[in-house]
Length: 212
Ligand code: SAH
Image 1 (cartoon, rainbow, N blue to C red):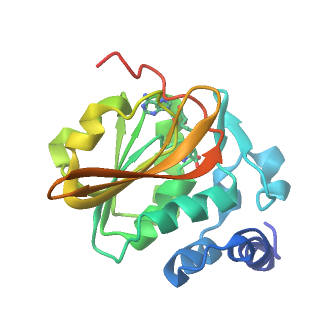
Image 2 (cartoon, protein in one colour):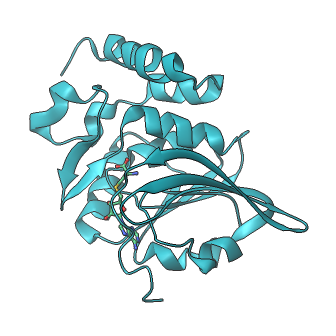
């Protein structure tokens, strides 16, 4: 459809992502490989590689490429992990995780978005992803605990179920706050949880945070 997709991806990775300090080679390779235009609505395919979030319907957005790179790098995936993602949205971030980990379990509260992402990701050939429509504040206990958890909608407080479903030694990256939000890296050690503030961000709110 766009013969210069490869070149656009290369520009996106070089200029917006590596250029701003995301250096993990496996993350950059995944971002170079995945056709981001497959995850945005038709009228926006020509701007799929721009440095901004884009609307994907239902009032939701596909995250800015730099943020996808930054959050993915923070999980420090080595390959083979079991990863939980909350907020499937377009499925773009899901594809990045599926490239880097063993299995991805992704939860989305809006059914039409979950079904759309499922279609896109199966067309692209991903077979290591399980989808669920439901409230991500509950996590997905059936397949936990997880080596890593990625949350792409912002709760006011970290949902307790997500902490519970993180393995000892595991990492979670999550935007937290109302209005102004901070991206927090949570590490679970033998002794408990350690949290580090990484970056000021703006995500859509995690809805139904408290209805658990
Ligand atoms: N990672 C996505 C970003 C989507 S925006 C992408 O790159 O496309 C955040 C998504 O979180 C939206 O699709 C929204 O519907 C979803 N969401 C909001 N609250 C949720 C909840 N409680 N449980 C699961 N998904 C939720």
